[in-house]
Image 1 (spheres, one colour):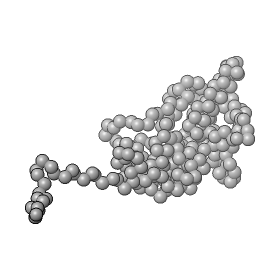
Image 2 (image 1 turned 45 degrees about the vertical axis):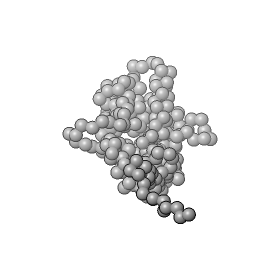
Image 3 (image 1 turned 180 degrees about the horizontal axis):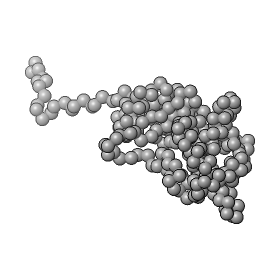
Image 4 (image 1 turned 180 degrees about the vertical axis):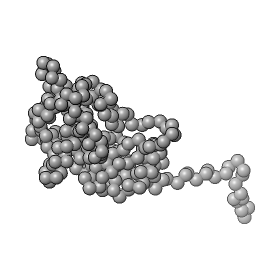
Length: 235
């Protein structure tokens, strides 16, 4: 018996299922719609997490940042951020882009520095410059910092222990931003991060140096609390 040929026509209510959307080329996990490869994402996340990305602490990420600089800058611009990078010292970090009169949300916080903290950063920046000129590592001890900052202690102050505590508190704050890195073989010696070269321009260093020299000479009152003499930086 000859059976009639099967009708291959599919009824309207039995249309084949739509094909699944093609997976993204750089998908790393289920539902991943990102376009960047894994190593580029890691470099970008380190920049966003902060405080910086540098060749010393991140030897695997630094060449990725250099390779994909343009692509990473585009991603940062989506958040109104810009990349600050110094290829010579291998340091990079993000900061708020200058958007002029355009009102935009701020992703980075501004940290207000006390007078002591501002002086400390300036001192570290100067030590970094000296070390570079001599081709040495920029290393400083807690005692050296305390001795230098004592020049700015209020002449009428007799609370030396309290002043020392404020200095050590300033050191701890700077450490949290990876500007000072503890040397493993020592309890009170630190290496200064080259990031400071980008945070403080030559003009700012000159202006702050003149101001603080006047303060040390007693021409301008020394303030221990955040004031107009204090600095701000993004974190």
